[in-house]
Length: 145
Image (cartoon, rainbow, N blue to C red; front, side):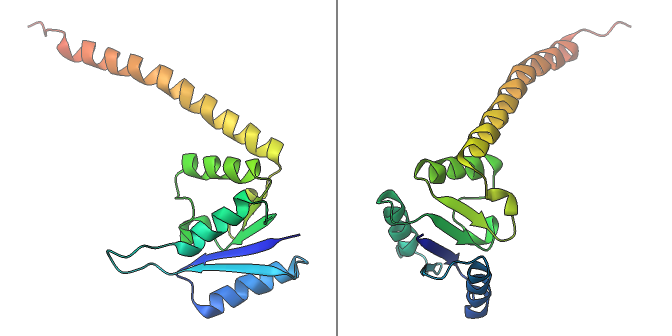
């Protein structure tokens, strides 16, 4: 199994702690990708790009991160998280977050979660325009008096 750790702006002790956690899961051959936020006007996240290339070439099976927010890997909105999990799953890579253990989902579970989320967004989209229309109609009615 090819296992990777991705870290961004983490101190050496944090990375060592994450590495120890991954080793405690039974993985020994670990590739590390480590990015540091660059100063303005400099290209950044070179290791992220290298890791994504390795994912596309089927060189990785698992990617471990400390947390979704801290990694800067995929953003923190639910839409970004689910889409990213779908993309990782498409390449048969498990994204596992230490602080969000629910990220360790099977491909079927990821697809199901994304489908349910999309249906939820669709149902909200159907409700919102009607609610706006109703509010605007009630505001425009002349008052009697």
